[in-house]
Length: 385
Picture 1 (cartoon, helix red, strand yellow):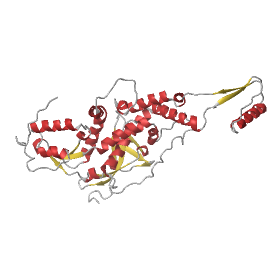
Picture 2 (cartoon, one colour; picture 1 turned 30 degrees about the horizontal axis):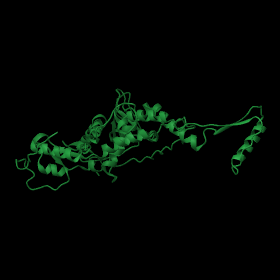
Picture 3 (tube, helix red, strand yellow; picture 1 turned 135 degrees about the vertical axis):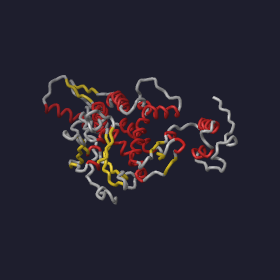
Picture 4 (spheres, helix red, strand yellow; picture 1 turned 90 degrees about the vertical axis):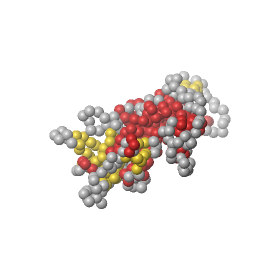
């Protein structure tokens, strides 16, 4: 327990909101309820885009440094970086939850559950994004919070990060709320296709008679016709004036495949340019990738890097003193063996890396002579195209 903040290790416990089940709150296939954050994940493109960004951001290595230039040195990661929530699940699990909240709702909130002697947070327990309401007091302009319907008395214990921010608003905008029509259309098309086959959303055929029939005659004719079909495959004998017309619908029409393709590409595009192509959705464009390396570079440049900068700043704010965090982007830009070795040779030849640094990247043990950038340690390698 902290000496200066004796009450700040107490955690408020709120019941988790129920995970919405597809269609549980919708009266028809055309009605989609996106009031809960997880509802949008019914759309595969949303799941794929959000999971890709959140997973990469959470799993890339994070290094902690002090100083700059000649005085820069790497230091051990503090407690808040190793297990931010203090629940034993570690940094990767916590960062994934943090990113999921930002990507779906534009905000991530948590309770500062513990602090060090200087008042710096060492544990942050994240709230479900749909539990938190925030606004600024009209008189003081200070943030006010409500969690699961309960007012937060000490606003200093509320930890808040946001994206898609707008002047005059405390909370960031929700991508799901602002693109609910596109996401809902995609989910509706998928649900209709499923209902088409599972529940018989259409008749399989028409039994037509040229003469007018009352309800009793129509029911009798239908029952006799169905009995013949369900029997021993004997021929069906129709009386005078009867015709049977089978209804056939193309699979792509019953599944609304064109609608699903369009909405899938649009849903992926919500989270970054080029993401639909990276995830394999057809956008009608001519964008191609020469190799895996170029594909990873485009993902890093156009989609992932802005999020990585935000996460680096978030970790830096939580680190004590003058420490700062850097995410190792090199782990994403994977190359083939020959290209990687050529890059190592250039680094050694120009003396901005030493042999042991290269060996560490390649998961090799250091050598006694590998820490000094000498002529002997820098092999003369000719770099061709």
